[in-house]
Length: 74
Image 1 (cartoon, rainbow, N blue to C red):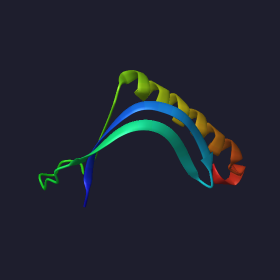
Image 2 (image 1 turned 30 degrees about the vertical axis):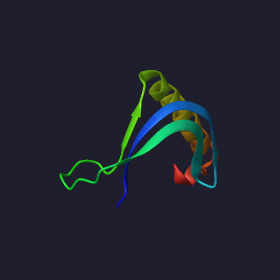
Image 3 (image 1 turned 30 degrees about the horizontal axis):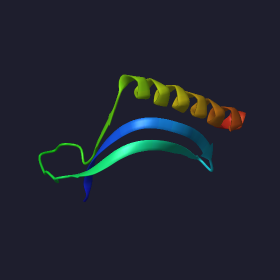
């Protein structure tokens, strides 16, 4: 399994469709030496500001998903 270190630099936009959330972002992706020590396969690093942006955008997208669900699926 390939492992990576991913540094999220900027979230450009987000959209959803067909049950998927699509993110357009700037990120630095570098290979990471594989380890069998129980550590995560890949690591995502982002600033607090970008984390807050991502959280807000994900919340908005999830609310849109919930609005489209039939009442019987809630």
